[in-house]
Length: 558
Image (cartoon, rainbow, N blue to C red; front, side, top):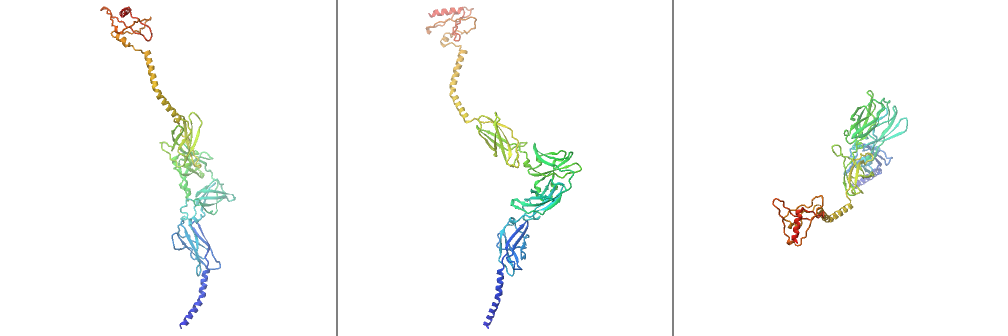
């Protein structure tokens, strides 16, 4: 009994084995899909692939995905049990800047092995789709309103919506000649067209920062209107005069009034209608001339758009062509302020920020280069130095020479192409050189060495002067001792005839005695006085009474 049961079981297993093997063989022969492609346009995520075996029918396909840091695979919503070779998984909420992995397999009674797709980052894989375009017509212009690619709540371009740039191709419908216009705003106006003419165009977007260029939009066509009675103003220009902006334009007719409006240029990058964001410029409303003047402080630093409209009271023209107005480009560049430190053979020039009225420094955010011109005060031969630094050395100058300097500033950016007027001329004298210092030291040493000789010579000279022109009136000590009791009388008398003084010889000083002659009481005393005159060499005589006294004295000596 037991043997029979085992034999039956064996027969059953043998009978079943061919079916199992057949099923296993069918599963093994089911191949994985090939050539899987991921197409991402804006926020649309599309998967495409090829079947491995077209002869096998009723095969479905399923995808799984895996995010960074995950070990498990997750079923990809929208791409499960797909009978076609295409699926859309745009509904999946992904971080478009994170890498993602996908895998696919074929399914029938059994499944194929998984086919893994190379990992990718959605943003890098994404392509820019066509933008939406809306047109408005004028008599000689077309206004283009461009909406950025993607949906309003786009995830893919959420951070780049304002970074799109646009380009277009336009042509007359009756002609195949195309004109390309690059780098336009989301609202752009094409001017100088023909009235009552049909024009066609197409637009594409680009993200230059990400090196992405989109595809063209569908072709849009529109017909311009009948020509308006009043043309718009033309040739608008902005200049700077005395720290004021001067706006000028041309117009065909006289006796017109004009108004000028401005708009922040960055608003043009934002999609939508900015018609009511234009603002009136002060002092430029209802002006009768083809220019208006307004102060620089009306605009802060930035880029603006300006437009002008004409009116005769009954009719109004379309707005003029919008011009870009950059305050940095149009800014009045003030001359630099500098100080000079003089050396023997060079100048050190220190350049500072220019100053406005009220001695307030002007802050300039763009780089400058400086042109410095200098010359000798006695010559017109100028030399020039171009420097980027604010600390400049002017070499090869002559010592003790007056040089004059002036400077002006230029913008380094060639697009700005601005230059200030020259500063006031500053003149400075260089200091003595080394040779001059050596000679100065030598001269001081010679002067100090010669000073004693000069003092001695001056004393001798003064002594001679005093001896000749201011002689001493005091007699020698010997004579003064002898005549000490007799009054002296000035012998240098101015007389009409020469006076002769008689002299005597004193042989023995010890025998000298004082002689006095006394007259009567009622007569005057007369004294003998004798003195040698060193200046004239002449002798002077006293009166007869003095001569007599002298003779008596001589006899006593004998």
